[in-house]
Length: 296
Image 1 (cartoon, rainbow, N blue to C red):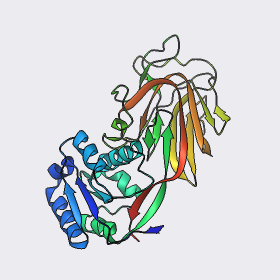
Image 2 (cartoon, rainbow, N blue to C red):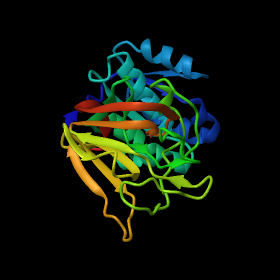
Image 3 (cartoon, rainbow, N blue to C red):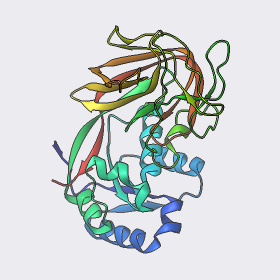
Image 4 (spheres, rainbow, N blue to C red):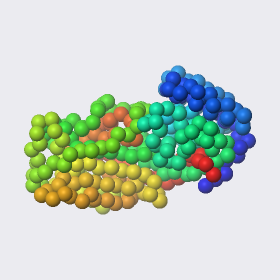
């Protein structure tokens, strides 16, 4: 943990969703920050204005007032600008309660006063990040679900989630909070294609490699794959195989490099749009890649 100087000049970006959702909390947070440090406040009205404002912050320390989407957007933008490693990011969570769970999980207070005081008096904690081979970033988790619909000849199909098509890396970090994946088990003989009801979930045929070691191969259908950063420089990988006769135990591993390949698959990174279809994607852990100000 690194001490954050309270004399820093702050660049406060207030997300428009936060202003519409809870203007009173925004006002309180702004007053507390202004009373404790020199601040420059920015009120962007669009993602483009948000990006331009962040790029013009100079040496000021960025503070975001907003929900998880605003935090993820800021991390992605700073990564794209290659400035993520050099600044301590702060957030005052404001928004609907279901859109603040990532901030809570990271240890940020969800009360406006407590969060603003943490910005002024807290310490910087370096956190791991997943970066994929298309330069997309992941703070919370990557989820690859079971597929939905009749099986194609090559095993491709629609993902069992809302689809938004392929997305730019920063767009994948701008949507509502990650929804828990709960695919229903699909039963069938190992190595044989399952025959689910029309429109129901069916298993994915994927090869998952962790640090060059194959954890599951194409002959073992899986219901879901989840990647989560933050395990001492590694990502935690969990695979839910299709149950055969009895409930199958999840497979797990921790590694710094995870490659998923196989028939076309889609995935959701953090709270972003669904990405894909792709036939291969690699995620690499960058240890301590970004800093977040937390209560001391």
